[in-house]
Amino acid sequence: MDKKTTQASPTTSKKSNWPEVNTVSVHIVPEILMNGLSDFFAAAKYGLFFGGIYAAGGWLLIVLLFQLGLPYLVYPLAIGFALIAPFIACGFYFISHQLEEKNPLSWGRAFGVVKAMFSRDLGWMALVTGFSLFIWLDMAAFITLSFFGFKLVSIPDLFNLILTTQKGAVFLLVGNTVGAVIAFIVFSFSVVSFPMLYHRDIDFVTAMVTSVRMVMKNPVPMAVWCVTIATLIVLSLLTGLLGLLIVLPVLGHASWHLYRRAVCEAIK
Image 1 (cartoon, rainbow, N blue to C red):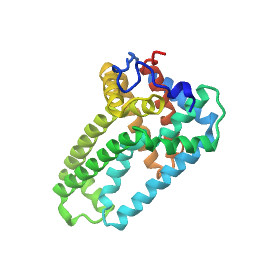
Image 2 (cartoon, one colour; image 1 turned 45 degrees about the vertical axis):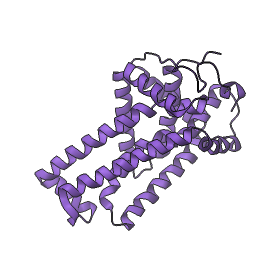
Image 3 (tube, rainbow, N blue to C red; image 1 turned 30 degrees about the vertical axis):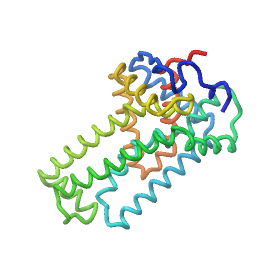
């Protein structure tokens, strides 16, 4: 990372005031998606590689749930993937940043940046979002067992109960409502905090508060962006996670451009 982007400044050091946030419109959503697509095509081999790693990780987790006899957690885990997506996308922030600065890309630098993330406050943010995912899975298990008890043994059983019984319809409503609330809370404190922690020398609490302030200042555009992310993740799930090969890089690059548009530049 260039020295000029890592050097702390009066507005980005850990002792400074909160970074300023901008007002954006709903038009920013298609704009950053187009920016994300542009960055993806400009560095497709990096996007496909990292996207493939995370898709493979998702497959392994799903297989593990079946092996543990917890098939009813496959759907919550797949949906909960969006909770940790901002951290997973950190490598794409680096790629977009380098493209923005017109710096050459290399595998060595990309892997070095991803490795270095764990030694900074990005690691703490990863713990926060990871803990949120575990909370969601615990709540999903509690809701499922509260409705159906321990008699549920397979995904076909769950689908049959949801599609043919009133209890199943209520379960689907409650489960998705709780999931949506948790997802929006996590979205609020992480939507720009991860790219900000990559780009600036600040602590993770400052990044989280700035992210929440940005969402509060732009509730409608950020709600549209949240729904857009959820929709693209669901479409990826319908492809057996193969869609993540493209969706995850595009969302990662788009998140970088959102951060650059929504959070004011640090004062030099």
